[in-house]
Length: 610
Image (cartoon, rainbow, N blue to C red):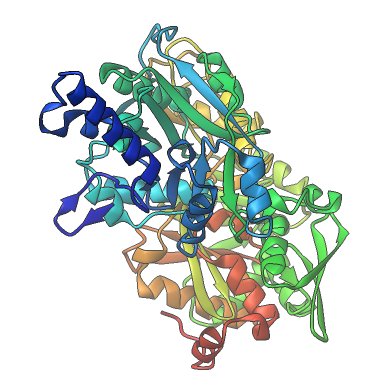
């Protein structure tokens, strides 16, 4: 527990067991009768294991079940769970009795407990490459940890909680930091059982291991686990335990490091966070949905809105609430008109509509203007973007084209997707995606092209394949880096070929477009976005008259008002913008009556651009 005066050690909840006290007094009496001296200053009392112990971790409490002798008290402790938190009762001695005591309130968590015996632990043969492990040192670290938690759909923690716990002796936080950028790549939390409740077994436990799904480095999770294990070994702990869902792929990592399953059980409360763990598997069609559709359907389920999946492969579903029913394909719904969709479908048409609304656009021409006109345009602009007038997910786009020969090749590549090809001046800067729902900004994120970091022994082609596999795994197959002509051209522009083996630590951009489907990464900037950029996005949405849209701008900085409009996406991927409430605002738009009364009142004030 903590206070304004700084961190304190976790304490008992409910007092010591009366029978244990009486047994201790009886033992002291016998020692005096036999002429033995009792412990000086109550030392033995201080070293005895504490009873009825739980530890606040910010996202919820760890309830140490082995310290509870009264099942009813354990249940009462779980009933005290704070809303929107997740308490975990581990080492529960008699889980069947606990479940029988409160079957409507608690459930047996489908997790395994694994233990790393420090007597058999072997250190890594070599240190991590490209990053290092350190303790949490600032509130900025705490914010980065929350960003990673959000990306992994974990319960977040108030940043000041991390900060107040930085000197606590019972809880330790480690982070992985990129050697070059200083970015936090991953995190792990550890609890020292001896300091929490005088554990006679000298145990420790691992919690909240998570890495940034967009991190390019290998071995982040392993390095964090090893650092935590070695931290506790140095402090005399005997083992390190962890609880992991039975089907979590991370089990392979734990077994590789020497963790073995042990027969301990975990109990949790039935709440909305844990819902999918105790309601049984989702219908088969739900599992077949892509992450963009699944996010929306899950939000509908949370509100009691009926969801009928009409075509899982295509991401189609029908939501029904009261007398209202709306058919959707991911974030595209029946509320988007065919006219609005056709405006977004043709990039040249989109450009004309938003330009007429006062939104700044780059200069543009079509490929049928003739080679002489194209050459003159190239001389004026210096570098061009060639793209199909219709298409999505970055297909057929060539960026940074600087010669007539490259333009001809890029035009042919674009024509594979659309007969009409656009040639546009290249605007230097970063790619900004703004999600506008009901003509209000909901999320803003900078999207960056795929990059690789050399390890000193793999070829660029191998590095791309490895990075692509990692991105695909992190996004459920939605993101990967194609080994195509555009990737090869980008690598060649950086001075390399696919077969080259760059020096260790060298960072190379392998795509020019920041599209997530081609391996790009996304970085939330909603809280720092300049109002002029918000105005431009909302103006573009109004010009198209579209209720849900992703507006793409090229910018110098999220905090700078300069921009150039690139395109509008009528079916933006809402799942890419967590922790911003994109799915919530989408369902609000479809079913206003499902919103809390306070939110409906706020919505009646009218749309705002800031």
